[in-house]
Amino acid sequence: MATPTTAADPQPVGLRERKKRRTRDALVDAAHRLFLCHGYGRTTVDEIASEVEVSQRTFFRYFANKEEVALAVLAEAEEAFLEFLRARPAGENPLEAMRGAVREVWQAVDRGQDSGPAALELFELIESTPTLLAAHLRHSIQQEVEVARILADREGLDPAVDLRPRLLAAVFGTVVRISHLAYAADPDAHRHSMDGMLALIERHFDQLGPALAGSWR
Amino acid sequence: MATPTTAADPQPVGLRERKKRRTRDALVDAAHRLFLCHGYGRTTVDEIASEVEVSQRTFFRYFANKEEVALAVLAEAEEAFLEFLRARPAGENPLEAMRGAVREVWQAVDRGQDSGPAALELFELIESTPTLLAAHLRHSIQQEVEVARILADREGLDPAVDLRPRLLAAVFGTVVRISHLAYAADPDAHRHSMDGMLALIERHFDQLGPALAGSWR
DNA sequence: GAACATTATGTCAGCCTCTGACATTCGACA
DNA sequence: TGTCGAATGTCAGAGGCTGACATAATGTTC
Image (tube, rainbow over all chains, first blue to last red; front, top):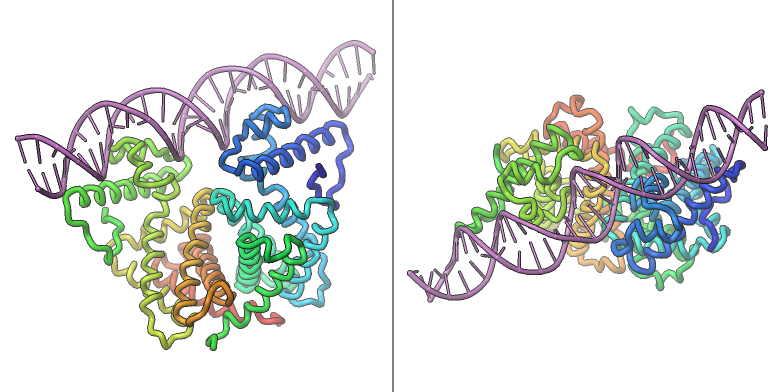
């Protein structure tokens, strides 16, 4: 099983750090496997912990709650998105920059080990598990706040005064989320591939203008 | 304390039904009071239940979980929104219809008893309580699905084919949510009034176009 | 390498949310 | 008034999560 580690994060040096990373990855891995196999609700934290031969208490030292371990890989992808966004050329306007960053994230996921299919399965799990969906949405808006900050920085605006950064970040997040939802609703239709997901996101983006237009006729 | 009942719902006839409604309202009321006074996390279900002199088990027969009792009044408002939206004149385009419906909801809340201030305080509570925020967000997207269905109906479209209803519903929901957030961040700035909230929502709407425009200069 | 300081882990006890099962009480209705 | 169904109470228990303390592993210093 490949560890779902973002290529970018520096690998720890000491034995202690390496060990910690290993058990953390093992926990994410075991959790992921059990969730997909038996369902989120029917998997207990004790099961995950004992799978890795670790006490339940230790599990909760790594993850604040059961949701966090399920969303861990997603959290890493979102972190990567922020990096990509910060690195986009200053010449691009906000919307271009974000569309570009999202493309980069999926390409990175595509290149990175076998975590691709797992990531896609994760969306199905999330959308079909109320608890996870709720946690995911809450996490998403935290992400939006950060995105808004980056956009404001890029454009030299004060986010406390100008509503546009927060607004665009939120709308963007919404479009991506709806795309995930559409994917989860019918994975087969999108070839279970990153490309399928990307195409879906692009299609939704293209419909954003028309949707907001006054008349739909 | 006024019961947070939507003016529209028919009052029950039998004694049994009336009693049920009363304990339900009492539970919402007590919960609301305790949450605002001691905080959501520091209020236990047992406390709420014993405040109404009802067993904990009974509480869970009225509400699926602790979040639900906190979001109950909001759920009623959202139900009302759907009603208003369905009743909007067919001549309006989707966006106009939704802006109109949202105005109507707040006006209705404004007219209805003293539940207005309580509703506004609720937003502060939600935004400052991760668990509640998560539950609220999940509930919101359920609402969006319903809104999308109504819009598709109004326009005679198939929501499975046309992405615009779902997309517009989601963007609309997002704008409203961000407005709530802005309100909660600084209630004093918005005069603790429905009008303040409405004005805030309108301002965000007006910035939507500019935010999505290519360049921000 | 021995002694010490740090840090991760295990154990235990306990609170809280939530559920199933069963007994009891209360309103509806003939 | 008696019968039926629905609402409630009681009890037991699983599962998520936390604080406190003991123990073991790692890192550091001489």
